[in-house]
Length: 285
Image (tube, rainbow, N blue to C red; front, side, top):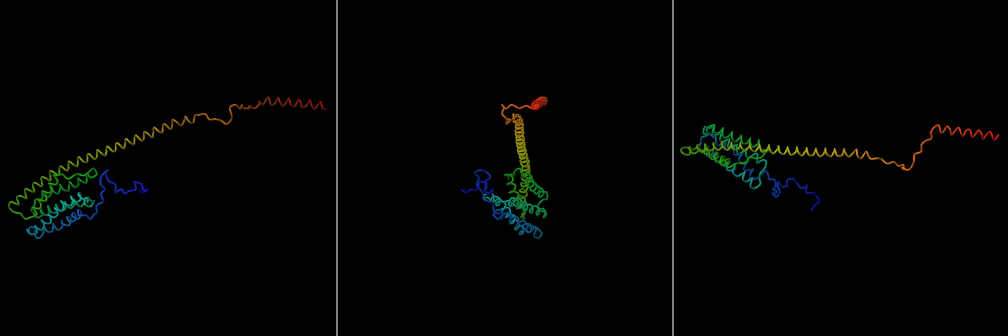
């Protein structure tokens, strides 16, 4: 046992809750972040493959689909790996949603620019995705909006539908992808409204908690002020009682005070003394 106090231990080694395991800080260059970086790098490559030539070459569109599929697969694995093995980092929290929106937005805008996907579909999906991202930052100081099952289903449906639009499909498969995109749009709108509801509830709960904390702090401050005021009044009441006590003198009580003789008595005594002196002098002559 060393002489260092317990408070000298590093703050990072202290668990957030009693009994929780202490996890080391994740390294930036972990597998989850590397997958996120790979997805970001794939975005410009995917765009080049999608619009190569006139943008309707089946071979190049197949290559673009392969790049899009790899990006979607990495999206499924990087978050799961980060949560399961404690690889969550600040970079991953920021880069992962950016990579998701980048690859999906590039695919939607590219397909609409090529005339394969109606622009209104692209606008609805991108408006929802960017709006929910802004909504998460709006309530982040009150809490985190968890990903719902509907949101995960929406992401899966969007990935499948957009992937099918990246490929050059005809006949029944073209009809299937149109229906799949319709389902994706419906899930996009429904889950977006649900996220808005969750954000409003979370913000209200957070503001109510802040008001409760402020009220408790105000009550504690008032109680402390009242205690200080009471102590001050008690001290002021005790001060006069101590000053009114009689002070003792060094002279004993039995010692009488000697009063000075009056002036007329001193004059009479002086005249008597002078008369006596004169008589004695005359008798001696």
